[in-house]
Amino acid sequence: MQIEKQKLIYKGKAKSVYETNDADYLILHFRDDTSAFNGERVEQLGRKGQVNNRFNAFIMQKLDAAGIETHFEQQLSDDEVLVKRLQMIPVECVVRNFAAGSLVRRLGLEEGQALTPPTYELFFKDDALGDPMVNESLSISLGWATAEQLAQMQALSYQVNDILKKLFDEGGLMLVDFKLEFGVYHDRIVLGDEFSPDGCRIWDKDTKKKLDKDRFRQSLGDVIESYEEVAQRIGVPLN
Ligand code: TMP
Image (tube, rainbow, N blue to C red):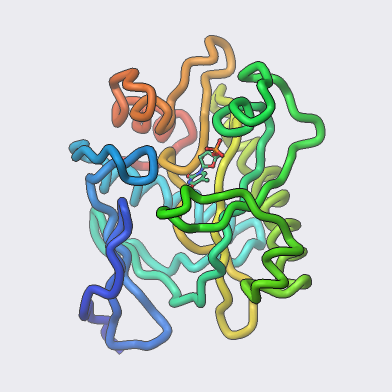
């Protein structure tokens, strides 16, 4: 069946989600919108939609090849991708290899402190509440996921970390932390959403230069140029 884009069903901060003529598939449109502080600051950054779409396609295919089931089906255009329609679990799974961001603020740690072994945290996906930290017990009690699903999400998040830490390391980069979102597809836990420099922290190994969305959050400039540098260093085809 020829897949056709139909109505817009959800507009997120950086992506729009469209239904298709097949109930099992959606089309995601990566926009140039870049937001920080739960949508308080939004700017259009030229090329971001294209760069993140290509970056995400490359990473999702690497993970699929390594045996992690993802929703990725096919890149459709510069800024659109065909994905499986998941029943999303409203929890963000964060793996950290080095302290940064909210962990530094919460515990007064030094940015860049190694976390050995890596840590794993859950946040409730809710902009109005500022994505508060939650745990497995709450997620089960509130019916967001079962204990078994949460255990699978944790194991998959650590597997993703092992695969991607190595990939970034080979490009002379540190994978500081990242966020994943999972959903259910025909009773299986499947990786959804996106993996791009918008949802992770990546530093140059030698200089510790930030090359991710912190450049936007902290007004450091060269945001998309940095995303492109990371893409080029890990082998993402950008043209
Ligand atoms: P944090 O330090 O702000 O908790 O974020 C940890 C990592 O997860 C960082 O790479 C940013 C990413 N993240 C998102 O992309 N979206 C979110 O809503 C949250 C909570 C984290």
